[in-house]
Amino acid sequence: MPLTTNQKKILLLYTGKRHENKKIVIVIRSAALHNNIKKKKSRPNNIYMEENKYISDIKLNTNINVNRCYQCGKCSAGCAVSEEMDYPPSRVMRMLQTNDVNNYKEILSSEAIWLCVSCQNCLTRCPMEIDIPQLMDYLRGKAIQNKSVNKKSKNILLFHKAFLDTVKYTGRLYEIGLIADYKMRTLNIFQDLDVAPKMFAKGKLPVKPEVVKNKKQMRAIFKNVQ
Image (cartoon, rainbow, N blue to C red; front, side, top):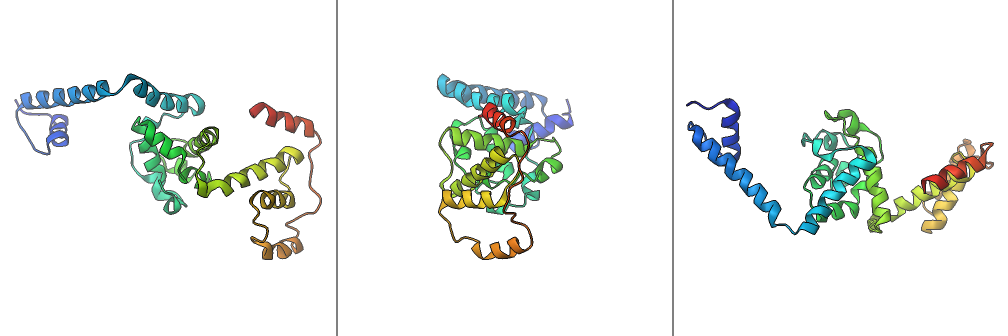
């Protein structure tokens, strides 16, 4: 009996050869399914449950199903900083899909999740509309929680904290306060100091911060999300 197009694709996938016998397709398909089940059963139960948990946690907290990604690579191709990342976005997605807790830990300690600038170019290009910037934000939070922030990315984390501090106490971005806070945290006192006079002359660094009327409400928002 002649094979269907899908059956021929299955044979090419598992054997790399073309066959015309339908029985061979059934045998190969059954063998592949048996091997997958055998691999799953060979894993310790506690590790298998732990590996599944991080995928379900991601879906619960972000409504993102990482298994919807089919590795077209458009996110990495359009990413402005992918060349600087240790793992480009498509690689991050694939590592999460493996259900391997070691890969998950590797991602949490990677530099890639901190280099993402949330430009949303990947989301715009993604055929499945997977919100990778939101996923990266979630992974950054987990990295902080697990104390596994990449050493090269610590200054980026300190900048995030300095930025949020200015918003917390003024309700607006106060540039001079942000710069002062960041430099005190990193001790990079003289970094980019030469551009400050030009920015000040052009009015980009206002001395007096713009403050929202209800600062207590702003602090309450931060308290609720911490």
